Length: 460
Ligand SMILES: [Zn+2]
Image 1: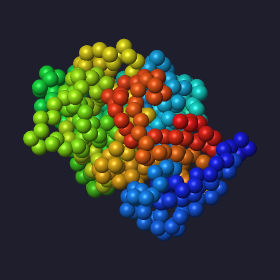
Image 2: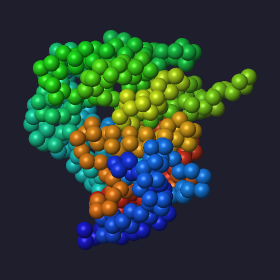
Image 3: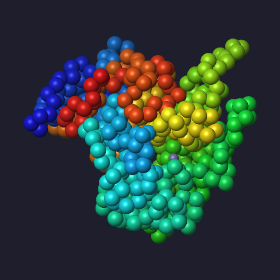
């Protein structure tokens, strides 16, 4: 690569989820290609450090080098809502977040249900980012007829989904599963039983009751998951290559149902979001503690912020500590293969309104790594688990080769200062919309440099 970057990363904490190695290493990139990786204590030790969770110990460097991340679930809002985000701004945000590959959901306006619309969805300045379109599972996402999946896959679709909504009609759901299977791609389902969740504003529970918000019950997710599993069991008999992925699961009960179905041998996978594993519905009441932070005994821990921050309105809604803990457990035990950001930017006029009428969604692609690192720093998630869920896990789902950190590979790497912190805000976020409840909060982990396909595309 004639114009690729040449640069040495000496004495870095290097984690490679592809080779399953972690440790102190010197990495040399020459003309955009990884020319050498030398592990200070040898490869056997690096294999052991990976197996032990990949966290740097005291005395290890805090400057880290990871492969570029992969997001299997983002909304860049193009075409139709470019005022909220578009390919250029979303890609700029993604490379700031440490991503090298992003799969885009098709709930654009109109819905991406034709090859031409898939093209429009990914058109524009990408800042080196690899963009993978997911096509609408049903025509117009209207839930009446399955899209022309073969044509969409030929045009580059890596999955189909009606994300934003479930495919509520069971017969159509089976047909979509079979069509995806015939084209060798997964169906990604947004699990929500609309008869239970319509107009829901917050998780059913004390916070919703206290604040007078309409409940979006946990059963609304569980029922959809159970029903999807029933249909998967029936479709696999006729389409043995079928694959079903349930996205942004948020409840312990739904994750338990997935775990049981996986034990049964069903081709079922799922992901969780950074916000569901780290935040709780108490944030809506004005509290600002991570989901894993204990409520001190005998201390009256009141809200520190105004209640009803509409940046917390999201679908599925934020839930209690136990559900957030279940999301982390699912990552640790492999029930969930990926952390998907569900990056859902919204223009101010859709968010700076009353909680119950605000659009659902959190812009999360720039804070995802930091939120996950906060869980690592608190010993809630091993770094190896987090990085696998941000690289090899989603790659497996999308059927793509993950970026690695081995000699001879074209460099797609991120340099992260694990000991530095930053605060999301208008000055620091690069996306078009800044609808995140993390505004102003100190977050660990600063992406200093993103190199994609051998070229630097972001530098702090
Ligand atoms: Zn969704």
